[in-house]
Length: 154
Image 1 (cartoon, helix red, strand yellow):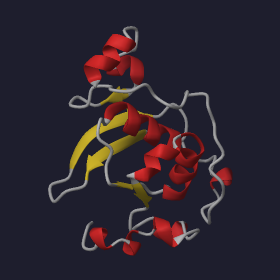
Image 2 (cartoon, rainbow, N blue to C red):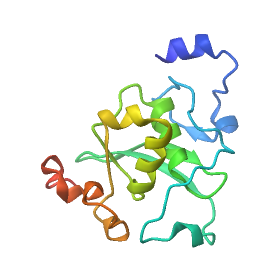
Image 3 (cartoon, one colour):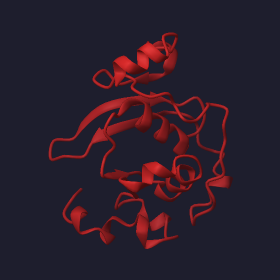
Image 4 (cartoon, helix red, strand yellow):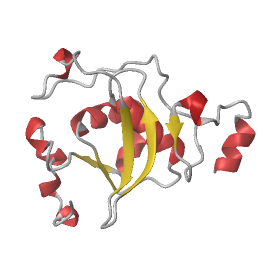
């Protein structure tokens, strides 16, 4: 897929200095679905993200959730963290989508994906991690305790 992407988009930036993304073992295989200026409403949850302008940009890390966790990529944020950053990385770098996507703001990621990338949700279940679920009580569907396959998973 990465070779096909490079053939279709020969001028796509590849250097982490230009893209802000460092994923050494994950070459880009699809274009990013969201433009960096594109802002989508993610709805409201009990966290009240609309008032969270006090947070500064940082980096979003992507980890392998196994017994031996490993950081496999990171993306430097040019604005505050948003589900679009997560979905851009997931779709542009992962040829095979995960069965479970565990993200602290799962309800926001779900809403953004549903609006533009509904096909992604056919095989990928989006849930919050156990630490953040108490801020996102909008649906039991985002609670990892609702899925037997996630029992005992950290």
